[in-house]
Amino acid sequence: MTFKDMPKVELHLHLEGAAPPSFIASLAREKKIDIGGIFDARGGYAFRDFDHFLKVYEAACTTLQSPDDFRRLTLAVLEESASHGVVYTEAFLSPDFCGGGDLAAWRDYLAAIQDAAAEAERTMGITLRGIITGIRHFGPDQCKVAAHCAAETMGDFITGYGMAGGEMVGRPGDYAYSFDMAREAGLQLTCHAGEWGGAAMVAETIRDLKVARIGHGIGAIDDPALIKQIAETGVVLEVCPGSNVVLRAVKDWGSHPIAKLRDAGVPVTVSTDDPPFFHTTMTAECDMLAKTFGWERDDFKALNDVALKAAFCDEATRTRVAKRLETTT
Ligand code: ADE
Ligand code: ZN
Image 1 (cartoon, rainbow, N blue to C red):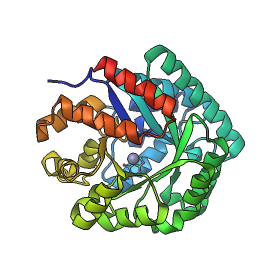
Image 2: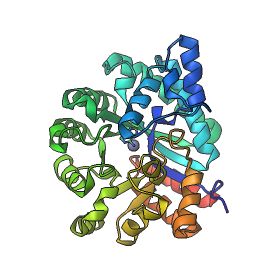
Image 3: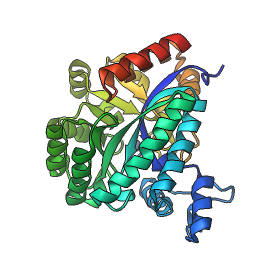
């Protein structure tokens, strides 16, 4: 049984993190950049743990140096997602990796990404929306720069602001200024939390950053009162089980809390995070959830409904994607 052809909605995908290693290796060759150390003998990304993963990720990003690199990357990523049935996806986009946070440069990179998204929508029927993302371990000031880029370029395509990176750096409240700026500009908000920081980090993030969604959020499992609060208020978790297993945020698939969270009424969604890093795809995530927890087609349809309801898009887009989910299911 495989869920490859089933239509899917994905909310948590890092654009650079979705770059195939062969794509990055060929850019490195083209530009004569030495990043050989980030690959294993078979050409995959090689990392020891989460901190090392972030370093490898940033080294890979050094090869992405122009708007055209991002145009090609976006097309390659969307082609791969579409081949796994994804009809709507949101990608984390980082001005830090697109011209170092300079607003004029960011506009050029964004134009190239949007160009590719429009082509993919036309030719593959996949819709992309962008969530501008501050990198937590770059610090609160650099996250403000990203939030400023977000506020200046928000619109039909850039619809959200978020934060990724080293979760244990600082406290959520240190980043409140960026989230406030983004909210006031009209952006919708998400933040990585509870991948490493446990239930307290999830609670603090919801309280201090007032986000609608949490990236990962699996640490909530240890606090029944928080689970109840999340279920009642409808904060949506962007859960990435394959990522959690590979980075060892959980021991194995069997001990992943996604099924318990869902059964407790928490709105959960499923995403791949950085698929080539974790040797995963949306199909593989569904197949493993089916194998581990006995989830069936109707469970995945329900996940799609939760994800589309929580998607950072306008109502016309939501309606159009809903029709695609209906007609292709
Ligand atoms: N950036 C890319 N993937 C990430 C993850 N899993 N956690 C935090 N930051 C990230
Ligand atoms: Zn992530």
